[in-house]
Image (cartoon, rainbow, N blue to C red; front, side, top):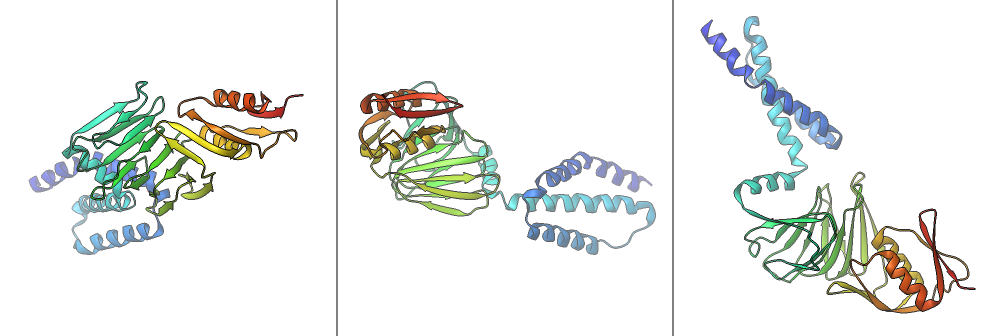
Length: 304
């Protein structure tokens, strides 16, 4: 009787743990593949076969023990598809971090000399020994100018994705919670999606990655639009190409009516934190155009 009571007390201490594990499994099951479900069934069957039949009076306790073991196994299965975050949680406990929240500065310089231009509300976190481990976590939007180091890959981590690079200039936008937008101005980067798929980007390409569907769209933009130390610089770029670039860069709709010469060439610069209305005002001034906002979109037209 004392042994049964001791067993009952030990198992009762596991109840909150078991409940939480099953809750985690239920919340994550939509993201788990059929192979993971099959693995779960094999684990369960194996545990069931390993335990010999017992008397009815204590059978309930062994079923509970089986549930605990299976739940632990299920938790491991869940984390198979999210290994990077699992590693991140482990590193949180073993390393110290530097956290920086955007405070209005024009540029933030990392210990390796790489530069970051952050937008309002953005935040970065990186390990204190950054020169030996160039891993950085980003919340919000930023442009990166990364110093090359063949011996150390520079990684930008987001909620469920990662960018790997050795030296390049690119931007990351997470304004839309359903998609990440990555724009590459020079160099090469690998974007690793939430299913561990690798998407390679070349200069003058923009990636729109749908986080819910794990789908990717790559959009080309004019190669004469460059990033230069906090400014966008463009030389002999058509109005149409510049408007398309601004539309994606700022997440706004810009239309031109039939009176506008879409092939008109423009040369100039604008700051990375300059708003779209300020940029459009410069465009309409140089091309003698009108700009008005209708139904949430900007419309350009020729002055009469």
